[in-house]
Length: 299
Image (cartoon, rainbow, N blue to C red; front, top):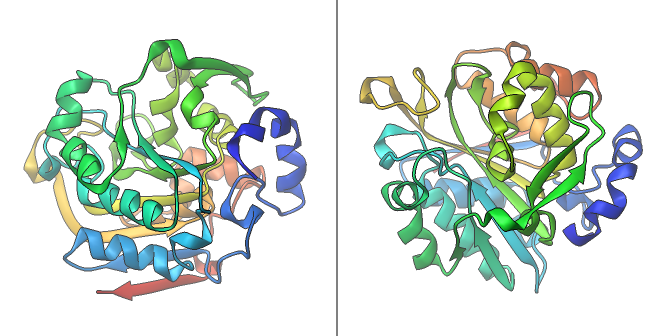
């Protein structure tokens, strides 16, 4: 299954979910991972990222030779890595490298920042990291948004970035951090970086909108950067006192399950996040972490 079939098959998504088959994840072309989630901890962001993916079967379980892959980090803010406002550059570069080693033809990295894109890409460290790993970093081109029918409870359609929709595989790589409206910004909220138009307008019904958006964009893999987490004054931060070093990466194929577990890193219950609760109630993924098969690795 590649992403070019996305628009043709969107109407089948709800049927696939109801049947327990996630159409747009790695499970669509290979055996499902032995674990629902992998959680790796240790001092090296690169090593724990690789370890988490290895625990799910390795990158070759998700990426096929010749794939065009989009890696979607959070590069929204003019902040350096220690402020935990953007995805850790070592996490991003490791994923890019692993995709290329697995045979990907091309790995594209982009985001639609809130602050000045050029400053965000450089200050985050992601520009240099992606280029060093062999990936293709680009700025969002406003001409490349395409209106996509979503038919959600709130979002009926929305312009989404064509390069993400048309890719063969998509890996979502958010940073785990506080958010004033949604409580936390994790994997499901990270998709706001590929929305066109006035994204702020979805804040009126943010949780419901995030569920609609997330069920329209199905990642092959979700890797949450919790090397440093922002515990307050998110999503931009700016005070090192709000940053906590966890040296952890969480990976999984179901974005609801990944976000549910990531909430516990902040001492929260998964049900504390409205978008996780709504998505789980709709049958899009589990939120009871006690019932998940989780592989934990310490490096």
